[in-house]
Image (cartoon, rainbow, N blue to C red; front, top):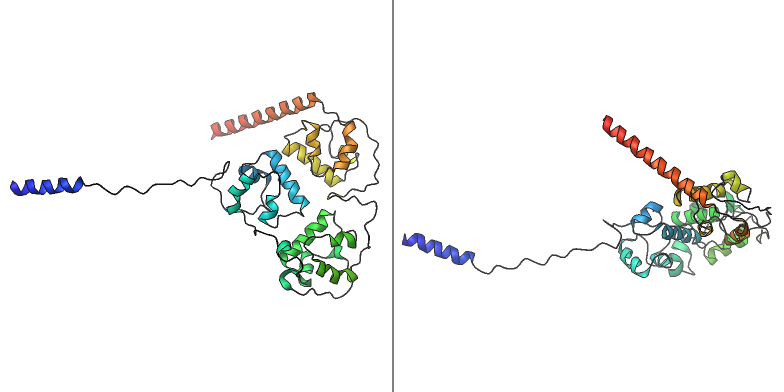
Length: 302
């Protein structure tokens, strides 16, 4: 009994010792409005994916517009930060996950030939017919070659002139001076070329009449002076981004294929009918309701 009591006493003293406290647990907070954030390339995000990062539809529209303005792709974190739709606080949250260099090559090597490769030119050529592979064989990197093609598409599918070709941000002054004598392009930009990314001619004259932008189809927008591709973009913007209708004149102004000048031309003739907006909302609700019923019936049958 004495031995048993001794063992119990020792055991009690051992278990009653002050134990070392657990280390403090810290939860790593994800950026506001985002969950499970991982590294991402902002150049390949869809509008829905931008919204998943915590941006509103309007902010996403502005970010994509800004991306188009800088040449179709972001080249650095520094450049992305300049987009006014992204607050400083939000940018700092996202910064560690952005798969871009801190500063673009253009800023770090202003007067140096990109990648220090020698540009090889065999003779005079029309840059409009060059593919990305052709530019790579000439001495540009794959990324630079893709940027040159994007810039050409940004201008409407043609470099237009040596003057416009020189404005391609990916081509350094040194490389342009080497290429310039061999370019089969007019020296100056034609006066009727509209200097914005969608590129419809400045001299197109349209006889405007009062119109409701929510009633127009692709052909209707084409009668206002837009190309078929531009008209399709406007309709898609209205039906997808704005869920079927322009709610205010400002919504039209924010569509990136409509320039500021073109918008000012059309503005006095725009009349948005509240009845059409209500009707489109009602039709959309009916479609959603019908879809929900179909899913419910399908689920019950299974």
